[in-house]
Length: 199
Image (cartoon, rainbow, N blue to C red; front, side, top):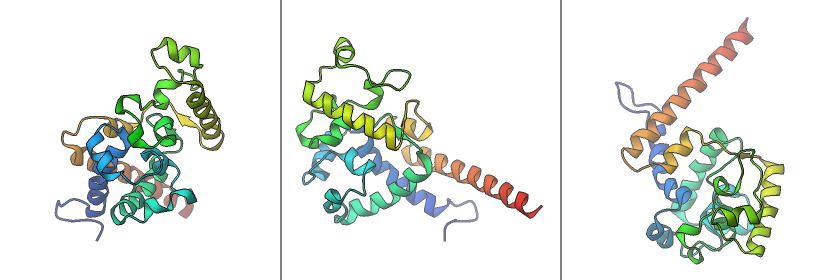
C-alpha cells in the first residue's frame, strides 16, 4: 500500500524520504568518513554516478545491493524534480576519484558559474581564490559545454536542493513534507487535466 490511512504517513513517500537522507551524503559531499567507507571501490566520484547512471563504465556501481536500491529511487526523484543539472553538482568530484580529492576542493557549478550561468574564466576563478590547474579546468570546460547542450544547468537552488545542502535536523520530516507537497500538487494538476479532457 502506498498510503497509511488514519493519519499515518504515506509509506512509499516515507521510504523515499528515508532514502534521500542517505543520498544527501552523496550530494553534499561533506561527510568524508561515510563517503570513503561506502566508496572505497569507486572508479569515479559520487556525482558521476548520480548524474550519469546509464554510463556502461559504471555498471559495477549498480552491482552493490544497497547502492542499486538507493540509485533506483534517486533516478525516479531526479526525473521528477530536476529538469536541469543542479548547481550543487561537482564536476571536479565526478571526474576524479573521490578519495583523491580533499573535501574542501569539491568545486561545484555554483562556484564556477556567473549569475548568467556562464562558466567563469580560469583567471576570474583565481581572483576569487579558486586555483584550478589548466588540465582540470579544460576538463571542467568540456564537461560544462556538454552539460549545457544536453541538459542545461540550474543556477538557482530549488526547495529539494536547499534540503540536500541544509542541516540534518529533522531531515526525514523535511524530506517527507517536501515530497508529500509535491505529490499533492501533481495530483491536483492531473485532476485538472482529466476534468478538461472530460469536458
